[in-house]
Image 1: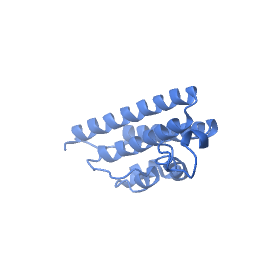
Image 2: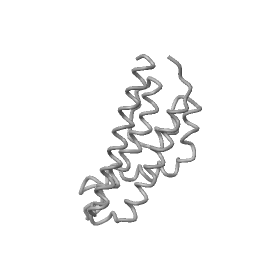
Image 3: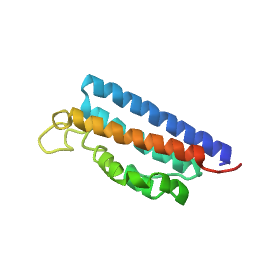
Image 4: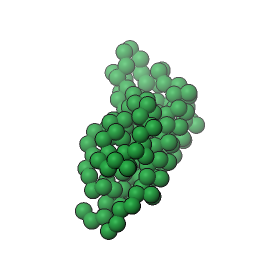
Length: 142
């Protein structure tokens, strides 16, 4: 892909990440905490993938922590280096927030609480903020 197309694709992923975070906020307000946690994870994952796409790369996987730590460009990877623990925290919400058999004997709505969702949204916001800043400051010419 050309640099222009890579930037466009990255913008699409970043926009979708923002929309996921907005939806997570709405779910938090309505008390759907497990769903808010999952969408927070998705927002962070898509924000990190936006960086990959800006480099013309095709990221694979769903671990926010792993995706952030393996960004091919060192300067962009450094933008997210302080968020490793937050990535690991968000990764915990990828499966068990969605499936009744993801947790022993309980459904997600019985296990995830307001505090979990608030922390997840805060962590996801950090990924969006830092990913946006990385992409704005990355000196890639056409």
